[in-house]
Length: 212
Image 1 (cartoon, rainbow, N blue to C red):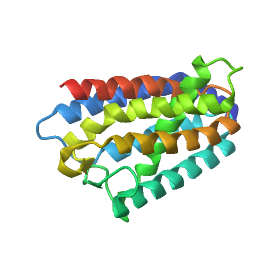
Image 2 (cartoon, rainbow, N blue to C red):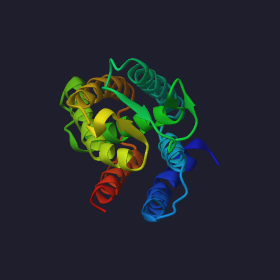
Image 3 (cartoon, rainbow, N blue to C red):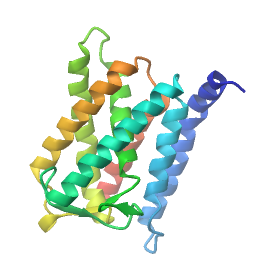
Image 4 (cartoon, rainbow, N blue to C red):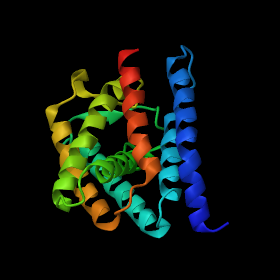
């Protein structure tokens, strides 16, 4: 089975896999005696499905590694200095930590950026300058983060000082998301259906957890 065949098959089955795992995830989160520490596994699954649904695996791998390292680095700076995002710390839900940051956290940055970029590629006219597309993608990343933040605090992903999410967090998310999205858009032109579909799944998933 060649790479193109795998990509086509994944693009066909990945949405159903994502729906299944997120339905299971909802059940786990809403169960009173839920098993903690499984959210990091979901991030890994989502990242791998996006990667292997990509038309060009090598390029996507470089983008994944770059965003993972970049995202982890800004989070490490933020947690240890308070100079980025605000004053916060991570709980135990996302697993093993390095420099106070869960090692899977970079994958969250990758998934959020990738889903937002492919949403832009799907809906924004190709004639729009890439930098404006990056700005739109950055705004979409902030939208996702806005719905993720309350859930993250509720389920011990991370916690903000005094339980207040600062506006500075969203400003930093926007700036770094635009930077990562700019690099992504310079290297990817075709819509990844898996990443595009994941945008809707995460938006719905975290909206539901916000109201339940």
